[in-house]
Image (cartoon, rainbow, N blue to C red; front, top):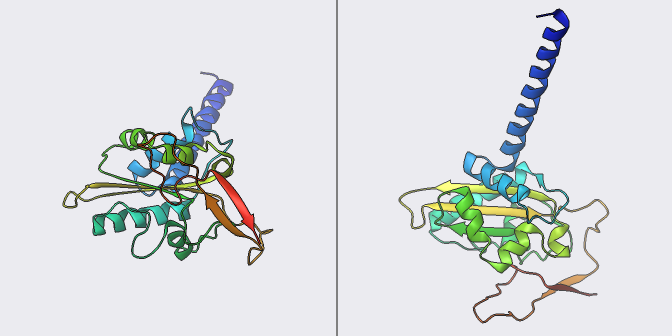
Length: 211
């Protein structure tokens, strides 16, 4: 093997190693454990994903992991837990949401219990109109959200055993006012089918701004 060819092989090996390490680091930012990392990548790489970009956020991943554990401890699958809404839970972690997000609402969270594997969890989320719209950015409000963090917790002694939390949100911008000049009221359209249920904060059909 010539010195030139050997140098090329070494350079290629270093490049591939760096890329593999970059993927590992990116996955670890999406979630704290393998299961949450895999679900994050499934969401990001889904063929139905409407967002141009979706970036892993370690703070969201930590908040999601904490919420998943809390759901297991309470044996409940709920957006409001320990008297905190989903938005309040993120605020407690020091995550600043856009000023148009109601503190007592939920425009950021999808939760699930009982599914063991990441693909199963994703498939189940896709059966819900509300969660599908949020995770895939199917309307303009959700499409603007570009940060993701996923949490997973397992406890065989608990009711659902497997607990999943997905946070996808925008973050507060420097240009946002300290105290938003508007109160944002989220208005929900009536479900097209009788079996579809709209829960507060799950699906945002349109926004009405009032001073």
